[in-house]
Image 1 (tube, rainbow, N blue to C red):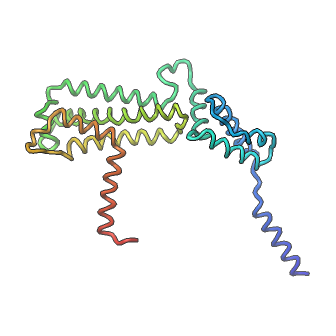
Image 2 (cartoon, rainbow, N blue to C red):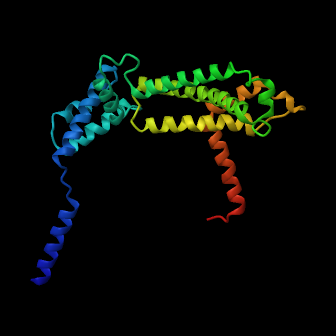
Image 3 (tube, rainbow, N blue to C red):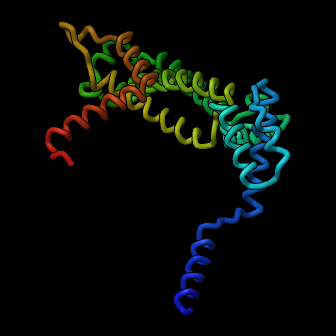
Length: 251
């Protein structure tokens, strides 16, 4: 009898441990996301799986999860998180915000204007010319060095912003923008400026004469470095991985 009671208690504990009860907050969140996805699909003319109709008539957890999974496939590449974020941004916007409804887009446009202003102002300086840029960071100093680096950095910044504004436009149209993109995009701007300076100042391509590096070619290198900053990072990371593979034993 003691053995039977012990076995019964163990079975009860196992059943209790495998049974998960969803809280009302989780169920409400599921319903909210389902409503958002349905509204998004209807508004954008997305074809919705007809199995959703039968599942919506039921109110159990299994039906909610199945409905959520089906709608996620229907609205892809958008996600419930991105739809909720864009809706919250549009809802919180005021009538005075005419520049842009999405803060990330507005900030990128403002940064592009700032880089463009730096590019124009530094380009007007007599210290920014072919000869001064040919000297590079090793043979230049003082205000000429500062203005030349600002000139090249502004070009790299314009390059990376050209790339990011195109990406964020596509993300807004497809409703794939999420709050984490704010951190990623601004980190990529810094990376783009650094890669533009690396290409234009540190990595120099000389054919025959060092004087062949002039205002035009250094500007192009800075622009390419900013525009393709993520690709340059991948190339440098690949080189570092190859070097580590040579000197470090295989783990």
